[in-house]
Length: 88
Image (cartoon, rainbow, N blue to C red; front, side):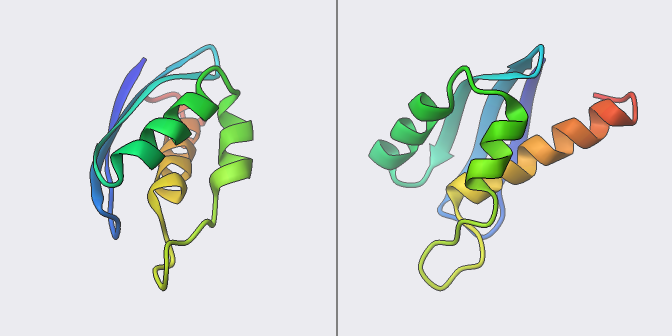
């Protein structure tokens, strides 16, 4: 299923991604540091959603309490929460 997540507190404004059978695919950030975000997208491609959350959750950026990787973990937590509730 395809998802769009509007970020908060980061230079990137939007994250788009696909989750199929619990696997993360096709991560695309809008805005932010293009090279770094393309690198993150490639690194998490094909990983289990839970593993991505575990690795990226809580990463800050400078003095900010969040970051583009942390925002992806938050988006994925929402996906998991929705699946557990039976909604997507």
